Image 1: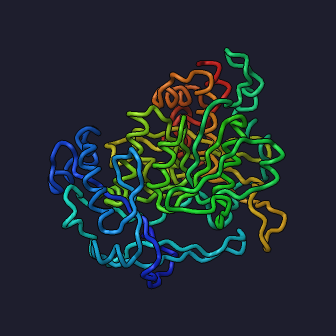
Image 2: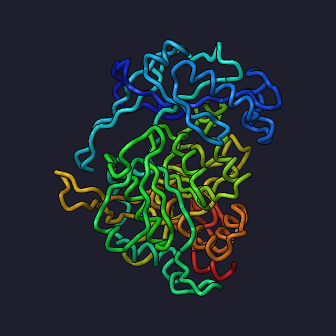
Image 3: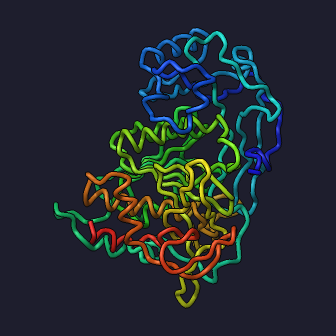
Amino acid sequence: MPTDPLAGRSLEPADPHEIVSFSVVCRPASGLDLTRFRRIMWTAPLEEILPSEETRRHVTEQLRARGIDVLDSKSPILCAKCTVATFESTFGGRLVRAVLPGDDELGSEATATIVLHPDSPAPSTAGIEGALFLIVMPPPKLAAPRIPYATCALNLHLPGDIAQLTGSSAVHRRLTTLGRPATGEGVTVAVVDSGFATHQYFTDHAYAINRIAAWDSANPASDPSVHGTWVLANLLACAPGVSAVAIKHNQIDIAFEAALFHPNVAVISLSWYYELDGSAPPPDYLFSLYVLIRLAVENMNIVVVVAAGNGEAETFPACMNQVIAVGGVTIDTVDNLSVWVDSSAYVAALTRGRDVPDLCGIAASMLLPAGVTSTHPEGWRDKEGATSAATAQVAGVAALLRQKDPTQTPAQICSLMKAKATDIILGVTASGAAAVGGPDLATGAGLVNAIAAWKAL
């Protein structure tokens, strides 16, 4: 069974005046009712599950008439927010504050999210013509361990060690056909995460970072978990010339929507996930994100790179065929590369046999920049990179390839990276999958090799 998404969080009564974010799934243009919609929602072509513009507009008008704020957007999923009191009186259900305690080791503060109580009845869209159901997403798992692992004998340094091990530094010394440095210049990469601390490390390297908050979030430079800061650093180690759009999330699908419609985004990096029970369909609250990811890849030609997970049996969205799913590789003091012991490796049930991961990045122990706190005044952390770091690295390599050839589709970029990955033959994952010669379940095609892929393009 999957882990409860609220595990480790205490539940407290929600103040009626607090704001809750949610999404609204509208009746598709095909006219399916909710019963028939549920039968096909995870397998149908996009055109069969997307609403018409008229339906979106009609549902929006009804919500606004009830005092609910709806984001003006082209998204097929409506992003909305209102007070707890307005939500409960309009749709029913029981909302609570889910509080995650602070972590002294990481220097993080407690964080709280408004969610549905686990025993709450499903909110009803009765009276909202054209609305099928509502989504209040619980927080995802960050694809980095909350406790240290003893699986690596050294700490890697950013950007140099990561750029070298992924083959990215060799690419950086090349020029594109336009005579520009092959660093990802001109490519926009969106990172959706917990927040992004400012740090002298980023300033010293003159990285181009635009920190923004999603529509339902605030203060993108505040990062209680420091997670997004680590992720951003790993992206820029591999693609230092990209324009990075760092989007702080509250409800995940709303933040993804911000990435999806940000101008010129070519790659989206997601270093978090939800755990699934492979014997059952995914929960409804993942449907909005599922639709938006498909829209990004299938209709907008955006490369979406996601974490495979840290030992879970099946995860979302890594199980989707449309994404590039990333596992982890570690290195020892005599340069032996092996699968990171806590990587997830599985055959996805949702997509009828898709192997996860596709390939890997470096998940070894690293010295990582983070925000300055009273417990960590130096502003650095010594932590396992995990699949969070690995995912951002692969997203950076995807940006290098998109810079060289912007016409490459997400599928072509994935295939190229897999074809030119470095084979890993050592180690076993958390689930017991062994790395062997050639493609395998443990590491997919192996460790991303930026220079080999770049030369082959």
